[in-house]
Length: 483
Ligand SMILES: [Zn+2]
Image (cartoon, rainbow, N blue to C red; front, side):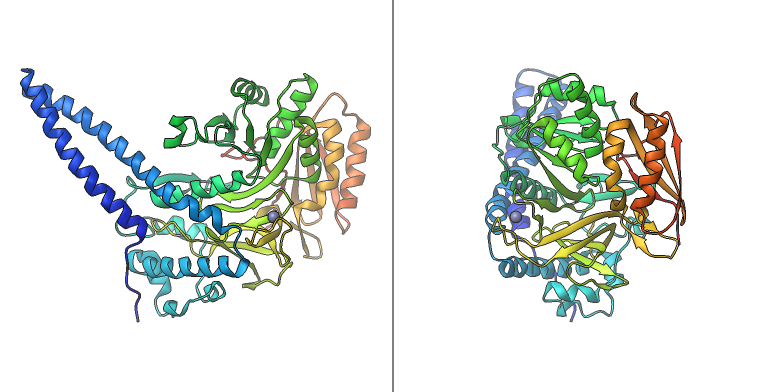
């Protein structure tokens, strides 16, 4: 039996709001025309004034919709994280069933992929495995057939992501899903010492979209362009004087060095690290310079909040937003076993991400967290597929094997990058600091060889600069070995 599409409460809410907005709109247009004509303006002038007013009404209408939806989502999202794990899984299963039913009806890309599969039999999160995995390339090639019926690119929130080769994926979020992500973000921050009036400085490639509550001085966000120099970013941080920093760790690491060198006083309440791996050494150094805690966040432009570190050190998966699976050799990995992270986003019906291969590697944690949240845990995030090292024997190891080099880099180098050229050959690119000597290069060679569990050749190359990726991320380890 094929699933039948049913409207959701948020849709009904939106329709009720639209009807109200339509009545106000008709009244306002009539009033505008009446007043303009009564003032003896010519007809074209009257139309111009009316159009301006209509634009204002529409802007207000969109904001009201956003606000209504977020007020609707927030209490549910905030209470849910403290429920028992079984209860959260039950809620996520219900959301999943509803999502699959709708996607089958309104999305031609997934309808084709699900044809012949018993999707109405999917009742639990474990049943997801009967569906095929989806890749970034498949979604890119499928556009616009992966945009659901009833949505257009103009009515969605647009974002894009790109890989190292510039392979851009345009992403279209249902505005209701985007408001759901915002509620998730608020839940994440509420877990720390955050108050609604606190200012947040974001290191990002693109500016953030201004939300309605920011106009009322709540949840205010300030944009720090990641492609600016460390000094320029620091100047903006000093200017905004934020209470919270949400940053790429490699970027804040360079800023922290300037803060330390020039004894600049910046004391945020806490720091969020996102988009790159946070090594233990970077974490400790940033915490000591800014004298506050730093928490890890795992999210992406495709599906937004995947997991967030709590104050007890647990990396909680936002299961009521994204179902996370760990896949090894095409099958579910055992708890604790490292595999590729595959996500299913439960809220975006405009351009759904179902069993989407992230290219990131991690493992699930079976134990609960001492904080008391029922949200499951991600044990480790090991890095991306193209950062994984293939040893001469064919064995693969995480880029984290090079973490012990952090201390040497910290003392002698301003920027570095480890590139695996062949299975048994590595190049370490370094941008020297004043403290760098020939002994540093020798030490790096010795210590790098110790990091890799099989004999390899290592060469240290001094360079003037190391570029970030197209979207400003910094790749500390890259493997060019494809097999
Ligand atoms: Zn916790």
